[in-house]
Every structure is written in structure tokens, then in C-alpha cells.
Length: 107
Image (cartoon, rainbow, N blue to C red; front, side):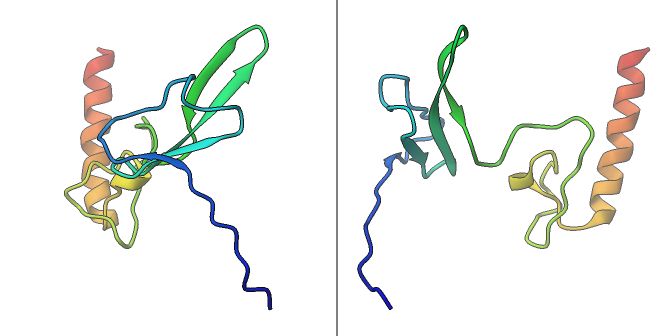
């Protein structure tokens, strides 16, 4: 068994909401924010440009999904995987409230 490992260190920050700029990363390079638990990379698209995107983390809020996980917390919103509810019962009450708010906002 080979015990020789190559240590890979990513550019990193432990400051809340700190996102690298396009000048901080090369294409294909990764950066991690240990406070927010997000990983970023630089993206280039012809005729669009260059930007930094988060490729992991809690994720964006979603409109029609409520997450439930074994290690969730019923006080969480359930709108992100990283902010999941613990029980289906708690997500059901959140879903009923969400559907009511959709109905009212559509009127």
C-alpha cells in the first residue's frame, strides 16, 4: 500500500460571506470558505465572461422543496439542504404555511 500522499491546500478564508474575486483564482483552482462551508471556482464562458461560482455549501433557497434530514433541526427553515428540518411533521406545517402565503401573494 502506498503511504505517500500529496497534500493539497486550497485557498481559504474563515470570514463570513467572503467570496474570492476573479483575480484571486486561476481557471480550475478552488477556494474554500470554512465559515460558510462553501467551495468556489472561477468560470469562463465565451461571449459571457468570467465569474466566480459557489459549487457547494448550503445551497440556494428553493421555492417548492423542503429538506428533512436525520441531523436537521425543526427550528430550521428547511429551504436549503444545510438548513434542513429534522421531522416530516415540522416540514408539513411549514409547507402548509408556504402554500397559504403563495395563495395570498397571487391574489
